Amino acid sequence: MNQPFIPITIKSCMEGTSCTAVFLESPSKSFTIFIGSPEGEALNRAVLNEPLPRPMTHDLVGSLLMGFGKSIKKAIVNQIVEGAFCAILILERVGSDGLRNEVHLDCRPSDAFVLSALHQFPLFASQEVLDEVVDVKIEDFIPEENLTDLPKFPELDIDEEKE
Image 1 (cartoon, rainbow, N blue to C red):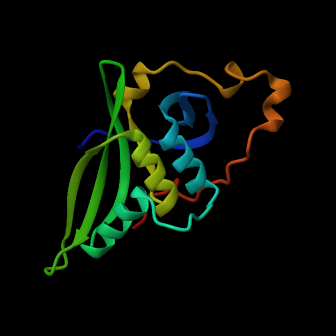
Image 2 (spheres, rainbow, N blue to C red; image 1 turned 120 degrees about the vertical axis):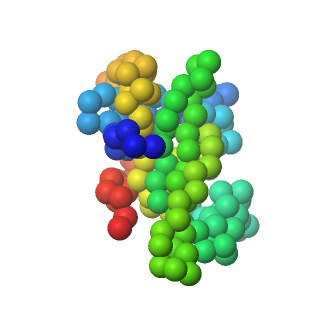
């Protein structure tokens, strides 16, 4: 985990019939990760802060972590295996000795995105992932005249790591 990671932000999502395109941006390129429709709906709800009457799975994960005294420090889209993006969540807990302990959990990028929107932690990509993805813009998928019809994603204040 000593290699540098590049910050990424979610710029927009476009829901389709069978999947959702998540448009991501790094300082050097933009790229897309396709996620399942249910995960896309959860991401849209989280980013737009639309509460539901009952907690959903991502809410449960956040509650469990808080209950065990852990917080999510960041998520990293760290590799692509056979065309599938992989990610890790970096959890942190301050021990009784005052030292910070990290735990790394494998996860799907879609879960990392939803949790990031809910809990305001930064997203990163490995250089390996950025080297492998194709630089695409949202305009490559949608005619420019239709771009104004897309929902506006609020700028999430998660670009900086929390101290």
